[in-house]
Structures are given as structure tokens and as C-alpha cells.
Amino acid sequence: MEDRINMIESEKMSISTKALVAVLAQSLSVKKASEVAKEYNISKKEIKQIIEMPQSFIDNDKYEDQQLSLLKESIIISRKANKLGRFENLDKIMLIYPSKGSNVIVEWIYQKKHTFYHTKNSELSKLIGDFYDFDSTTLSEDPLEIIIEIPEDQFEEIHHVESDLLDKIAEEGDFHPKITLFLKDFKRNNQQASKNSFQKRSDNSKKWKLESGMLLVPGENYIWSVEIDESEKGKYLLVSVPVNLYIESAQQSFIDLLKEVKPQTSQKKRNKSGKNRTGKVFSFKRGFSFFWKSNFFLFAAILIFFINKSSWISDDGTQVISFALVWEAFILICSFIACFRDRE
Image (cartoon, rainbow, N blue to C red; front, side, top):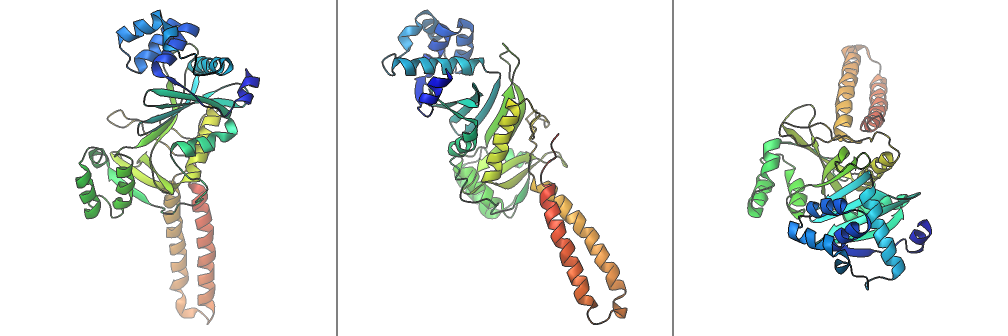
């Protein structure tokens, strides 16, 4: 199996949803085929037809014997997998399953077509970047460094308003003075948030358990991470994050899942409506909180110096400024470190 994967590792093989169900009915089990068919809303009548005559739904002439054999094995392995990385963007879905050794099976789902191919764990960052149309080589720093607070009801509202009204909201800036930047990307993303999730399940169970996940809105050279404000219920935080940081975080979450290490991000908290709350590996909010608190104490320390200003000699002012600048630089470094969550 592994030799054949290496021979045609980058070759993509596509199959329709009905053909995928037929392969499962023919090669795995009728039960599993029925489960997958229901997942993709195939009618009971069609499921019966596929189960009774699976070979008639499989196009054997499309691929050579070796390719068709590998495609079938990929389908079977993916449906037996108990770990899964799921990425959603508009009407596209990418599923990543563990395979043998350092390989993974990638499944793209678009317009009732499933495209499978094999690649290495080391290619995960490129996979994720390509899926969201990110160019991770353009910027390594966040060009915006913005955190926007928006009430939950207003965030839900912008999913459903007319396009013209969304432009008006952006112009008036009723939510936040910089909301225009987010709404521009949100509108381009069809007024919805994309998502990723990392899941696992026990053997032979059809119920997946969410391990971690994230809501996001892709920008041009950055992404917006959509987070629940843990300090104040009923509010979302829209945080601009560098593309490369998001990709690295998503890749590490999947690798941790494969190693059965508790992932760094968490989406187990839920809001009042029962929706998943997201926790971030990297959060500017944590860094900003550390920054302003530290500066408060620095400001208090400087005030103490100014109490005795009348007794200063000529160059004491320069020394106080130098003191402040050194500590401000130290605070900035510590604030950046504080943005990262400790491993658990």
C-alpha cells in the first residue's frame, strides 16, 4: 500500500458521492454505505439502488487498475479513520485523515464530487493555505493588529442583511470605527464565517467528538479570528491574525490530534444558544491585557520620580526617560509572549 502511495502520491482521483457510496457498499459494509449516503442527503430509493447494484455506479474505465485500487483503498481507510481534520470555506470542504506512516489522505468535496490524494504531514501548511487561497509567503506579521468587539446579536445580524445594507453599516460604523475592514472581508466571504475543526471518535463509532476548532473570515494578507469574549458574555471578538500564524496553529492542532496530545486550541465552551466557543493558541487580547496593566505600573513608578523633580540635577530627566524606554521595550517583548497560551 505505502509503495503505491509513493508512486502516485500527488495524483488526484475524483469520484461522485454516489460512486463513493457504491464503493463502500461493495468493499466495506452496507451499513457504512447507508450512513455516508444519509450524510449527503441521498434518498432512500437511491440508496437501495446503489446497494443492490453498486458496480453500475462505479466508473471502472476512468482509471487504470492500480489507480482504481488505490482510490478504493483511500475511501475505505478514510471511512474507518477515528481522527479527522475538517476545513470548510463557502461551498468547499477539505477533510484530512491519517494514513500509514507520515502520510495523510486528503479529500476535497465540491459540487458532489470527492477528490482524493495522498501527501505527507509536512505538506499540511500548504494544504491549508491553498484551501483558503492564502499566500503564507507574503507577510509574516499582522498588517492590522486590530481587535474589534461586537455584540452577539449584531454579529448574527450581519449574516442575513442585504448586501447594500451591509455596505451602509460599514460606512456608518455604528458597531466599531474599524468595522469597515472586517465587513469588506466578510462580504467577500459570502457573509459567513469559515471554520475548521479537529475531531476524533472511538473505534466503530459514528459519533465524532470535537477536540478543537476555530471560526475565521479570510482577508487578503491576514485572517479574522472570530472568538467569544470570555470576559464578557454575549460579545464576539474579531481579531486580525497573520496568515502564517493561523496556518502553523492549525497544522500543530492536527499533529497534536494524531499524537493524541490535548490540542492547544479549545472550542468546548458554549454560549447561551449552544454554539461552540473558540479558544485561541494566539490572542492579541491576552497580550494587550498584559501590556496596559504593565504600563500602569510603569506610569506609577515614573510618577514617583517626578514627585522629587525639584531636586533633580541637569541630566536626571534623561536618565528617567532612558529608564522608561528600557522598561517599555521589555514590556513589549513580554506582551508578545503573553499572546501565546501555555501548553497544557
